[in-house]
Length: 428
Image (cartoon, rainbow, N blue to C red; front, side, top):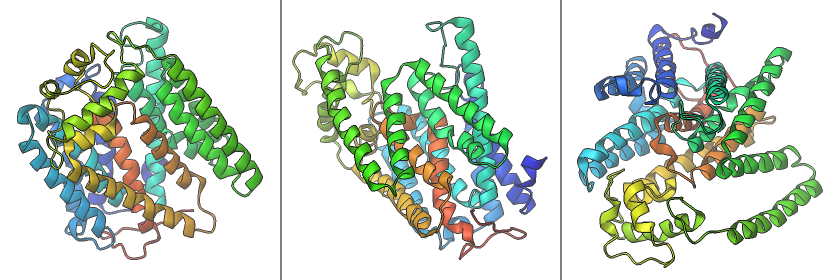
């Protein structure tokens, strides 16, 4: 009941909007996976579940959802992205295959951002969501560890219950990590212990996946976090930066020395490097509006493409089979088009810049506030190795974290109006 007491500060419609929002999150994280119940729900059922929180938001906030002055820029960009997404789908190489991917991207991503920047704009709401993240992370760790113990390291479905692949599992843990961090910075000793336990178990799960991309993302988060913690000790910051600057080239040289020119059926770094050239080749055909999100037509662009690395004989077969650029930025630029991608990146950067200004203006900004930026850093680095936002759970969590940042400036109640009966709480 204490958990729900933080929600019951608002009008009944507002309460229902928050509860439906969290319920949708539970569905997306735990039930959408085909390994759970994802295949049992029709597309119309999923459509209703995905859109319901936004409908409740409109009922609770009325015209403020589209006319709020405090969020004017975000709303304009969000609506523009939605419109461009619809146009992109109709101009796709294959409308029938792109429509599902675009629908999931918009409803579990852009609409989630729209809802969360209104609903998670005070301290207690953010606290509730962080508790939600901690609980979700605990369930994921428990279930994945049980499957690992029962089936063994290489058993069927190991580390693929909720994420379907080992790489996005690491991203899920990173995006849910504000939950245990919230517990760690709490004053309650039991909460601190639970938070550290979740961090330890989450880190162990990431280690067991043996994915270098996830390790690199965590290393970057740790390095930047250490620099932030010792930022007032400039000599220590310089020392840490020099160590990182020395280690990275050596590690990169070691990795390139191990590259295998014969990729076979395995995606190596050489294959990923060739994808950059292929992505540029495809982008030139439809630079403005893109070829459509996940049209599964990449092979048709191979006819007039010339390999830069002539040793990658199986590259065409890999492209035709995998149908991915293995990099979210490449995928967005090529498939969504330059116009939609630039607007989307502008939305993200605008939210982050405004959020940072709010934190910098605070005499003692909360550690968790800065940690959310580390989460986005880890996510950005990890997204360079796969198409992260095409997974509903990852897409939803990322955009909700963005929504928290977008609504952060409203927590002081400066100009944002609220529904009847609402109270505004400031961040501490």
